[in-house]
Length: 130
Length: 431
Image (tube, rainbow over all chains, first blue to last red; front, top):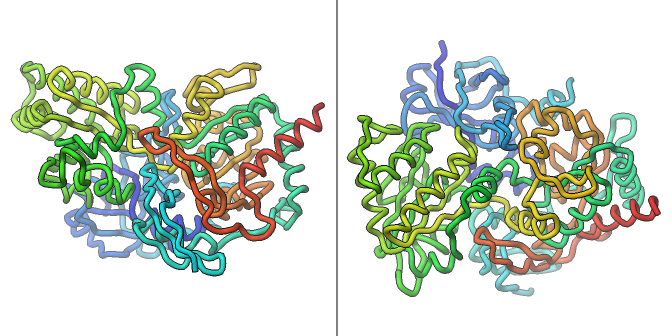
């Protein structure tokens, strides 16, 4: 079971504080490996706070932790803080502006109970082609 | 124990200049007036830190001397056909200035984090100009404050208190004298503080701004709703904006990163221009990195352009989309890089970041970042604004001095010195 949503990325306070503790620190990586989901969407998928979910766009796929959040104004919208996890899902083209489209990407969300969030080392090996 | 006052905070574009730090044994043990992000930096900057230059040998980063790291970086840049010097938004203007000179010396490209934050604002500014003012003027006079696509409570935690709705000005004494409107896709902590929160459909900012411009001119909007808002709601908002005495539109990455990008900024500036037919209204981007504004200023002084400047032709050439680091990497056009005070591997889309890992590059950064972990050369430096002094520009382009609060660890230099050493080495090898 899965649902389709519009993916937004952006700043969060935890991400802001996490980066000041070190850009490869556990706190930072935890702060950016979450996805805010509307309570109604979470209920329909049977998701609980902290469950692993897979977020997929046409540009990539990543496992993050579910954060059921009142910040999401309506169902069908999800949010991941800026960082290496969100970047796996972003359209790299810039429409000749230099700016990739970090907000408003169509995504599919599904439960992934058996899967784990990638570590810094795992993420790096993805970049390095490992 | 020493208490140092009036420290300028090196976190975001607010550059709050009232931080107090208590220093004991060259360590900051207490801070006052800081937001949670700022306090985290001042009290933890020295943790999880690499204090040795590193050079990659047989796939592993190994300790090296500073001179070896400088020489290796110079070699990487000199051997390249199109090197990129990137970053600088989290350091002082003095380092930025040397960085531009270095890019010119190696015939490369100088670019900065503007490309993934307010690059579209620069493009909108080129097209339209930007009616703006200082944050002090807003504090004293603004009675209507609109934040559009900005979650300021999390990105700029003291903005509201120091410069806008909660601040005490000469003519507006505080919250009761001001109206606060937040327009955002999400009901963020910032939206919850607003007198009026306007939830907008994702990617429909341009349409809503167009409708607001029509409503200001009393044109008929031939739709039932725009961006999820009824026509009555749009007309009410237009009336609120038209009837204020001094309005400000602060906008964030909700406009620059969404569908429309620089066209959203064109439209936002046009809306503010229209409002000035009725009242006084200004617009200001919520700049994120504490000195990204400074990097735009410095690059513009020295080259005529604010970012993405290409020296490979022998003169400054500027063409965002062509000379921006994101596009150069995506197309695989640059063949080396020097990254200063930035972590593009953690902030560029995967397919762009992957291509950075295919070219040799050096990193100068106090943090050991993901970008540093995949580099050929890593040179640790002092934290500007804590361990080294400098200058920075606030989001309203007011320059402020960054203080040295404590000494850096032994053998750790300010990034200005390190970039200067690389420049000197390249010049001496060439002449």
